[in-house]
Length: 269
Image (cartoon, rainbow, N blue to C red):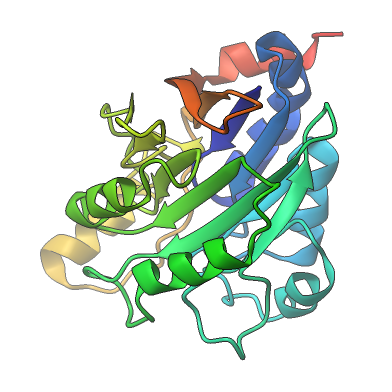
């Protein structure tokens, strides 16, 4: 089977290019499932129910989130009622949302989807290693394909998680830094791994934000609003091939869709 994971969707430009290109991309790449990190989808921080629905209608099967999960408080009800969006599993049990979920592929197989938050240079959260052990013990053995989005800052944190879960899940793909890493590989136990899938949004920017505002605040300490940038919009993601029977990854590669390609994919019938 072929799974596409879309890296952090940033603001309206990121949402729009996903909506424009995804149906054509699903057909071109013969994708069986699409998962996306949507925590920055609304103006660069948080996600709303309307954007959640828009991404679902565009062809995203499941949404993972991260440290900006509750920036838009109205998403809480969606997190409680919908089955295809998850919170970080190491968040407090009282916080809104599900710690893991299952979604169906195009061929009817259930896949478990889990989101985790890292701790290095991040806000204080519970131990992600203990959390994933707990979640994996809850998932039925019959669900052999398991995907983990590890939303973390440090590559060391992500590499430890990849090794910790090698052979226990199908893929561990990182998010949060908005910078694609070139370390995609299949670990010895059959788990696909990459430190960061990158950013889906405007790349003529600093991590998706207007360059001049970020530079001025950084250099002078003069506070500016960091608006989402607009130019050089791309989808950044990772395609993972997984054996249906064993749940082991058999292939992994980075993918980038620029604005020109998105226009071409929009016309794929």
